[in-house]
Length: 116
Image (cartoon, rainbow, N blue to C red; front, side, top):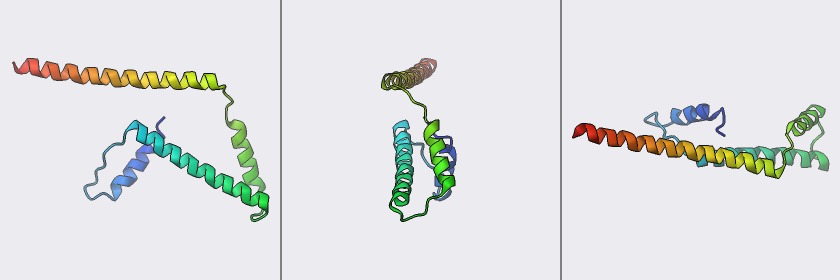
């Protein structure tokens, strides 16, 4: 669920840092940031649509067609299917986290055994 722009965003943040380093953010904070950006974009689109409907802004046919195409491209999925996909992805993430922790523990144990 990580945005393809995430590496570029990370590079831009390190550009202004004095040490040119920046710690990686957690998956949850990445999702929260992406959700906030999507919400901001939707708010902008909604404000534009409301301005067009109220007559404050002249309607642009190209923008209207683009928004209509965008809405039509959104796949329709049942709530149950979405819940199943989400649970599957969460389970995959938990399994990867578990295996990562298990591998770290195995490496630490191996290092201790080698030092004996």
